[in-house]
Length: 309
Length: 309
Image 1 (cartoon, rainbow over the protein chains, first blue to last red):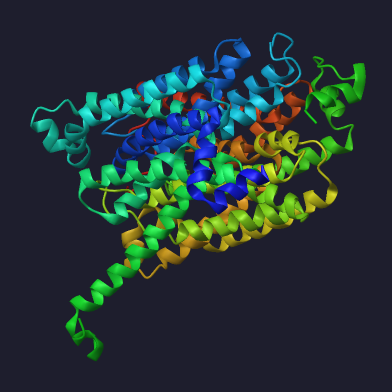
Image 2: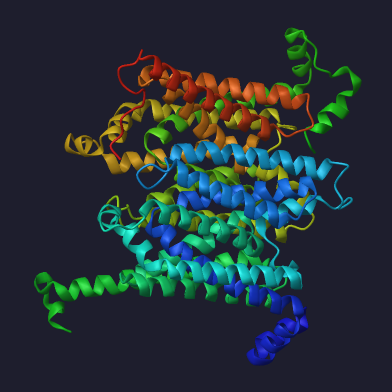
C-alpha cells in the first residue's frame, strides 16, 4: 500500500500505470467515468427543473429497493432499478403543474426509508439469507457504495446502462431544455411537456440506480447536484453548462479514485464526493472574485481606483 | 444491539397480552424503557412543533439535510472521543448556518441555486460521516445505530440534555412564533411591516438544526425527517386553523412515538420502521379523512393553509 502511494507521489505516470494495472481499479475507472458523465448530464436538468428534492428522495428509494431485493434473495440491482423507476413514474404521476409537492414527497420517502430499515433487519437476521454471517456489511455497501467491488459483468452492465442514459438525455436535451425553462410556451408549441417530464424522471431514476453502485445510495446528490451547481456558476449558456457539469462529475470520479488509491484509508466514495464539493467551492470563490472585480470596473464613480483597467 | 435484544434480555415474560394496562406496565418495568419513553416524549413535542413551522415554510429539503448532518456529527464526535451529543448539536447548528448563508432562489422558474447548495452540503456531510466511520476501525456495527436509531441505553443525563435543548428551542420559538408565522405566510407584507424576515429565517433554521440533532439521537439520522414532516403534514390536512393544527401535530407526534416504542419493544424490528409506518399511516388517514369531508361538502374551502409560494 505504502509502496503504491510512494510511486504515485514520486512519479505520477508510473503511479497511474500501476494503479490501472489492477483490474478492480480499471473497472472502477471505466464504470465510474460513464456513470459520472450520465449523472452530470442528468443532474444539470435536475437542478434546472428544481427537482433536487426528488433526487434526494430517490437516494432513499434506491436503498430500500436494493435491500428488498437482497431480503427476497434476488439480484440487488433488480430491486435497485425497479424501485427507482417505479418511484420516478409515481412522482411524474403525482406532479401537478410540473412538480410534486415537497410535503407529499417527504412523507412518502420517509416511510419508504422506514421500510428499508425493515428489509435490512429481515436480511441481516433472516435465516433464508444466502450470505451466511456477514450480511451486516451489505446495508453499508448499498448506502455508501463499493465501486472497487464491481465484478467484470457488473461493470459491463453498468457501463452499457450509463451509455444508454447519456444517449437518451442528449437526444431529448433540446426539447427538455425548452420545456424546463418555459413549460407554457413549450406546450403551446406542441411539445409533449408532461411526457418529457415523466421520461426525464425515469432517466433520473435509472441514473440514481447507477450512481448507487458507484458512490452509494446516500451520496447520489453529490454526483447529481454538485457538478451542476458548479457549472451554473461558471456560465449561463445552457449547453455549455451541460457539458461542464458532465466534465466536473467525471473529473471528480477520477480525482476521487486516485486519492482513494494513494491513501488507502480513505474510502473512494468520500474522496469522490469531496472532490466534487471542492470543485464547487473553488468555482464559487473564483466566480465571486471575478464578479466583484467586474462590478468595480463597471462602476466608474466608486473612486480613483476605478480609472485603472 | 438490536431492539430484538430487548426480547432476549427479558426472557419469556415479555409477550403481548390483551390487557393493555399490563402491557404498558411490562414496557415500563425497565429503566431503559422509561428513559426511552421520556426521551421519545421530549423529541416528539419538539419535532412536532418545529416540523409544523417547517411544513408551513416549505423547508422540507433543508429539514431533511439538517437531519442527515447528525450522522457525521455523531461519528466525528466518537472518532475524536467527544460526547456524541456535542457532535450532534455542533454539526446540525453549523449546517443550519451554512444553509442560511446559501443564495436565495430567484424566481419560480430558473436555476434553483439554493437547493443545489443544500444538496451539496448533504452529500458532503454524509460522505464525511462515512469517512469518520471508516477511520474509526471496528465501528461498522455502530453505523446502523447512528443511521437508523436505537432507543436502548439512553442514560438519565442524555434525557436531561434532550430536555434542556428542547426547552431552549421551544422557548425561542415561543418568543419568535408570532412574527415567524407572519413572515412564513406572507414574507412580503411582513417585511413591509418591519418584521426582520431574514433574521427570523436564520433563527428558524438553527431551531430546525437543534430539533434534528435531538430527534436523531433516538430515531437515527436517516429517520428524523419522518417525525418532522409526518405529524405536521397530517395535522395540516385535518384543519386549516393554526391554533388547532399545532396542538394536533404534537398529539399525533406523541401517539406515533409512544406506539412505535411500545410495539418495537415486543418485536424484533427496529423502532424506526414502526415510527415511520405509524406516521405515514396517520398522514394517509388524514388525507383520506379530508377528501371524504370535502366530498360530503361539509367544508366550503379546502383545509390547507394558504402559503404564497
